[in-house]
Length: 214
Image (cartoon, rainbow, N blue to C red; front, top):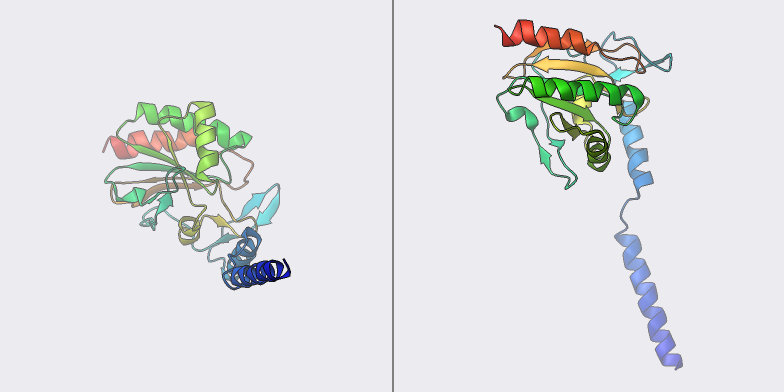
């Protein structure tokens, strides 16, 4: 009996040691690493954006009309599949926001979903750092079928490379961007206060009058 107990003890110690050596980083470790990474990023713009009235830092360079949008893979579904949605030769309306499941984002996403039905040859996307699971739940609950939600939660590179990431929160700032078939920016609005709405109607008027009627 003593021999059996000794063997079991040795096995437990061995397994424990192996676990420590191959220990997987916890989500807390990963979050701390991301926060440290954010601290290395710099503001390279003169944007004046606030969140709840307090100034926030938007990292990177401001995206302006005439720029070519920097394109990276985004997570497109709850299978966690990545895709570069910008490879498609189509006009795209891109709405970035802190989270879909908030009052302002919910209202504007529904409006853009309706617009997407009116302009079937234009691709409408909502990009947040919400998980794809949360995005799918939101769309299912709100009958969002024409606008496609995609997530920058995994890499955050879309926000970082296009001047759309809020440094203090690790979220995307609220903005509305229209690009042509070659991903050249034709229209961009950075919303000055995160709790305010983007001027969706102004963007849709621009889309119809300046891009689709050319």
